[in-house]
Every structure is written in C-alpha cells, then in structure tokens.
Amino acid sequence: MPRKPTSKVFPALETEEAAKTEEEQTKHLLVNEDSPDYLKKVELIDGIRQAPNKAARRDAIADAAKALGKSTRTIKRMVENVEQVGVATLAVGRKDKGQYRISKQWHDFIVYLHKWGNREGSRINHNQIFVYLKALAFKGQKLQQNKYDENFKGYSQVREDLILGKYPSHVTVYKIINSYLQEQDTTVRHPGLPVEGKILQTTEGILEITHSNQIWQIDHTILDILLIDEKDRKVISRPYITLVMDSYSGCVTGFYLGFEAAGSHEVGLALRHAILPKHYGAEYQLQKTWQICGIPEYIMTDRAKEFKSEHLKQISLQLGFIRRLRAFPQAGGLIESIFDKINKEILSLYGGYTGSSVEERPPEAERTACLTLDDLEKILVRYFVDHYNYHDYPRVKNQKRIKRWKSSFLLEEPELIDERELDICLMKVAYRNVEKHGSVNFLGWVYQGDCLLDYEGKQVSLRYDKRNITTVLAYTRPINGEPGEFIGIMQARDCERERMSLAELNYIKKKLRDEGKEVDNSSILNERLSRFEDVEQKRKERRRQRRKKAQQKHELKTNKSKVVELFPENDAPEEITTSQESLIDATFDADPPNIVNSIDKQATQNKPEPNQTSKARRRPRVGVNDWNQFMRDNW
Image (cartoon, rainbow, N blue to C red):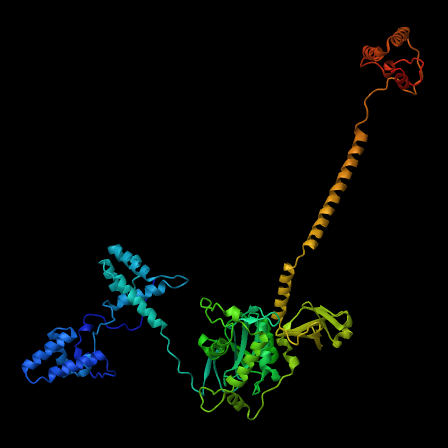
C-alpha cells in the first residue's frame, strides 16, 4: 500500500484553477502552423470584421455559425477574443482537453496503487485497481477506523470521498494509468558527454577518461545469425561474441567468437587477443592493419558472475590492471551500440539472420544459413579494422578513431608483452600422461611434439585456445607449489584442418554418435543378445545339475530301507522246533500257488511281540544258505 504522495507536479484540474480568464491563458501566443481548420476560421472571422454595415455583419456571423457548426453567440465571442488578444486564439481549443476532472490526490493515489501492485513480482491490471477502489467505498464509515490511517496517510481527501461512496469511474482510472505508462515509456536521447572531461561512473567511484588504453570495456552477447558446419553445411547454432573496446578512442581492441556461452575463459581469450599484436593473412583481405595492442590500466564490466571469477582475478594480478564494475547500465552504452551495429548493419545482409525477437524469427532462417564460424570471423575482422576503427570519431570533427587512439602515444609506444605471459588467459586443462613418441591423448585426439620426448611417463599440464584446438601448449606439472614451466607446442596428429574450434569438434562427435545410431546393427545386437541368453541357459543347467546331485546325496543319507531281512545270509543256522519243521514241510508239500500265501500268513501269525528280543524274532533256518535264492527257485 502506498505511503506518500508523489512529488511530481500534476496539471491544474481544480475548478478554481480552471476559472482563469482566456486572455491570461492565451497571452503572447503565436501560431506556428497553418492548419485547414485554423485558416477557415481566419477567413470567416475576417469576413465578419470587414463587413461594411450591421446587416452585412449579422449575415456574416450567421454564415460563420453555420459553417463551423457553432452558435452565433460563440462566433461573437471568437470575434471579441481576436480583437482583444489576437488571431492566435482561433487556434486554441478547450483548455481541459485530455485532462481528468479529479483532484491531484486522487490522481496520485491511483498512480501509487498501480506502482504498489507491480512490485515484488505482482502484476495488477487496471480493472483490479478500480475494483479495489469500489471495495474501499463499500466500507463506508469503517474507513475512519485507526487501522486505515497508514493506508491513507497523505490522502485525506481520498479517504473522505470513499467514506461518502465517491470514487472515479473505470474510464477515468484507465486514462490516468495509461497516461502514466505513456510518460514512463518516453525516452529522451542523451546529448552525450563532452570530448574532454568524459567520466565513467563505477561502483568504486568516478573515472575520468584522459588517454588511450586507460579504460577498456568488456561485454558479450549472442549474435542474431545461425552458423553452419564447414563440412556438412548443417546448422549448428547462434554464436557468442565477447568484445573489448577502448573508452577514450572508441576503437575495438579485440574480440573472441565461439559457440560456447560467454564465461570467464571467453573473457580471458578476448583480453589475450586485445593485448597481443594482431597479424592476419591475405585470406582476410584487409586494407588496413589492426595496430591496437597493449595492456589497459582499468577493465570495466557489468556485474555478471564471469567478471567476478577467480580466473579473471588471476589474470588481473598477472597483467597488473584494475577491475571495476559499472555503477549504472547506461555506462556500457559504447559497447552496446556496436552490438546493435553488428546485427543490423552486417549480419542482416546474410542468410540465416534471425533478428532479435524469437517470436518474429524468419521461417527461412535455418534454410538460408550459409556462414561458418571462420567466415563470420573474417567478416568481423574486416569490419573492425577497415570500417569501424577508421570511422570518424563522433565527438571530434576530422579525426578517425584509430588516430585518436594513436594520439596518446606520440612520446611513448604501448607496452608489448611476451605471448607466454598471456598463457594464463588460455583454458587450463587437467593433467595428462605423456606416452611414447612424445604423444598425449586429449579430446579424443593424439597430440605429438618433439618437446615431450624427454617427458615420457610423466604428467604435463595442457592449455589451449578454444577457438583453435589443433594446437595445444604443454607445461610441466607444478611440484611442491612451484609454478609449471613452458615446455613447447604440440599439434594434433590426425587433424586434416589447420583450424578447428572446440565447439565444432564437439558438434562433429555428436554427429558421428547420431549417425552410428542409424546404422543397421541388427546382426551385432542379435549376436550379443543370443550370447547373453546362452550364458543364462548354461547357468540354469549348472544349477539344475547341482540340485540333482544334492538330492541324490540326501536320499542316500536319509532314505535307507526299513525292511527287516528275515534270514540274514551270514547268521549261523539254528535249530528249529518240531512244530516249525512240520509247518514248513506242510507248506512246501502244498500246491505251488499257495506257497507265498501260506508263508505270508505264517509270517503274520508268528510276528513277534514288541518286547521280544531280536534273536527270538529270527526265522529258523531250513537247511538252506540263501533264503532269497531259495524263494526265487521255488516261486
């Protein structure tokens, strides 16, 4: 809920303010344009004033009233205003046109409701504000309670009107909010700072720009164009550019172009390019040379996390420049303007241009893409060297940007730095083992160099430029906290191209993986599947054999026969009683079919009692050694 009324002056809308005389409001007016309505009024009023007599004047007034669609009284008042103030009154319309007949407090209250409703992620619309006013008016006398004092602090008239049930209509609420939004959207172009005494506002204070290589600005953006692969001519993605510019001359000092989202390493590579002298071959078709180099005193950036990284801190300590952050986004206008020029003046002419809006992207952008990363780099280098840096400096007539940059070095040339000292700007890689013939495996490639022949079996540290990974720098591994020393340069052994970025290599690897998935590998996959099935079958068979052997072993131990042998073979023959002998004789004299039944019956009858001994239970012998053989012979 708003607390204080706005301090902005609101147009006079009170009744007493609208009662000023027309003569005071139209004093010293001068018409600057001749509109048809104004000229028509001038002709009619002039005809009235030039009338020779009263009758002609009366007829002229009647004709003017009919022509303008007004009453004769209004025409007479127009004639009086012309005679008293001047002809400019004919061009003045209603004084309250476009204004709202409400008080200043009501206007401010509605505007503050809109501001309050659009804070902290909320998005209030016009109708919700009107409904809120209607709900407050519904409270009536309850608004006099103390809990509403803070809500209407500074808006006593609004509170009184709401208690009486008075509030603006929804049309008035809409008009006030739309008028406020229109005022907020109005942008006024800055005239620019003077040539001498230009300043940059940072979070640590104000820096005055006095000479070249004093303050460099760094920023990055994604460009509005689609790039393709050099070999297959297929779309990869939109590139990112990291740009370095000199604040004093406005020259581009260096840049980095790649497919990776901008980070601290991209900033380091752009700085490395800006600091070192630049040499380009005939394939770039340059008419001028890129003479800008050296080390800046300050680096000014926005507050993105990559500009606060540990990597950039190490670079600044190594090279000796001071980092500063912009106090306001407007301080980066120099570098933001060239981003807009690159997109609209250069990239918009080539196929694959996407524009800045994703919703309004041309449907033919992917179909017409024709530039590779190397092509775009050559285009940008030509633009920076031959056009932008040699263009007129906007604040000084007859002075080029490059000449303004050179003007600070009439007595002293910019400091040149050894390329090895800038290796800290390169991407640092994990350690790798040196293999035979001085080779190292990295990124799926084999890098070789004679400088590593003495380091076989040892570990080295690698650094590389993501813009060109065909070349890798080797350093010794730090030992006991000592920094690594430069060993030499290694080249990719199996790469056919002279230059290739890391993004292009990753794209090629991904494409090969996707193509490998489309190859008919049915026989290979079926063979692999059958192999796994065969292994599983063998395992099941072994388990079955182990269970079978275990079962047999268990049966031998637990399932012994419980049948008692009636006539053990090894027992000594015993005497039998007379009754038993007669029973046996009678049994064997009977018919053969009854032998078994008789024996079984006799065995059942002679079954020993549980308390009898085993010796008593034995069946007497009949003079045979093998009772079983005897039973088989007589069966």
